[in-house]
Amino acid sequence: MDAKIKENLLTEFKQKCRDRRLKITPQRTIIYEELINSLDHPSVDILYGRVKKKLPDISFDTVYRTLMTFNTIGIADIVEGINTSKRYDGNTNQHYHFICVKCGAITDITDVPFRFEIPEQIKQKYNPRSVKIFFEGLCGKC
Image (cartoon, rainbow, N blue to C red):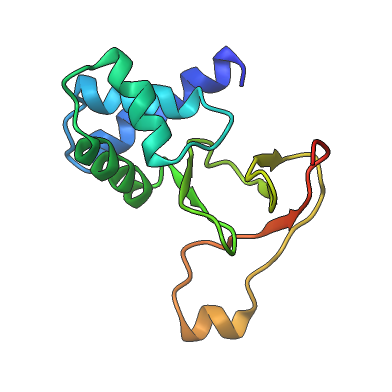
């Protein structure tokens, strides 16, 4: 991810925190920066390990709750396949994911002109917040 995109994401992070009256703490900022710098869609465990190197006193629960908050305010997405654990993505721009069923790697798919519109009867009956589309199979390495 290039520097300009990261700068825009950090600006959006700060604005969404202000909008929700959330303090922009060093912990939240470091967790978010680590998330947007991660192209591997880390789990809470993995992200916790990375953040703990920068903030040795941070707890696992703080990282977990912060990621849940980020998802609630719309600055992080949860990525899950059929038989995979929750992973997190700081890129909330429209894109899809390919999940390898063997090694668990998650790859962003951004260059495919694939679009799915929520059917009108779903919109009328429910209040959908988002649509998650992912592809599963074997990656090129497996």
